[in-house]
Image 1 (cartoon, helix red, strand yellow):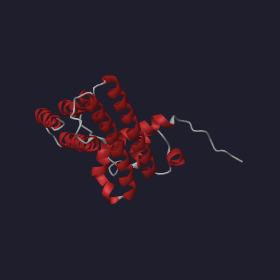
Image 2 (cartoon, helix red, strand yellow; image 1 turned 180 degrees about the vertical axis):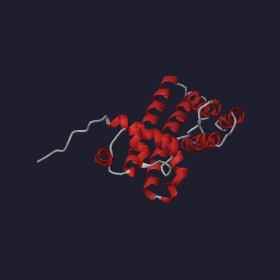
Image 3 (tube, helix red, strand yellow; image 1 turned 180 degrees about the horizontal axis):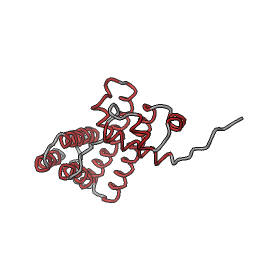
Image 4 (cartoon, rainbow, N blue to C red; image 1 turned 45 degrees about the vertical axis):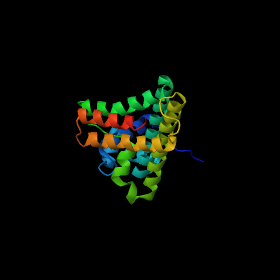
Length: 195
């Protein structure tokens, strides 16, 4: 029985390359040719390894979600302060507004905006991402409450959802051209709502 030819590429590396293309252009605007070029794969290798563009996209979303979550949790643990983590994360959206590079937003939220409502399967993928990020914000809120930085009577889950929606909103506005001073003011309002 034949087991097929071994993979001649690093699956993690090609997934990262595909993720960058989807993140920059979105699902619909990304062609198979764009992906093959970025991943440096032949069409046959692509289909053998990933099945279809949609299956690849699902794997890219999963990878983005897990990489982002790991980075965020490591940062939260390194900072110690939940409130400082929240402020720093919101400030990162302001930094995008100051950057010379074109802002890309969040791949999960970009996907929600692009077509989650027209495809129930994609909506499920997006919901998993939202829940993962909500969980991290909820951990930060609870830690802040333990540290006396956020009042203990505030509901951590509601605040976490508020922070996910606020972060998504700022990133979307920055993609639409919001200037850094306006973004900074919005961050101030969001943080004041935690008191």
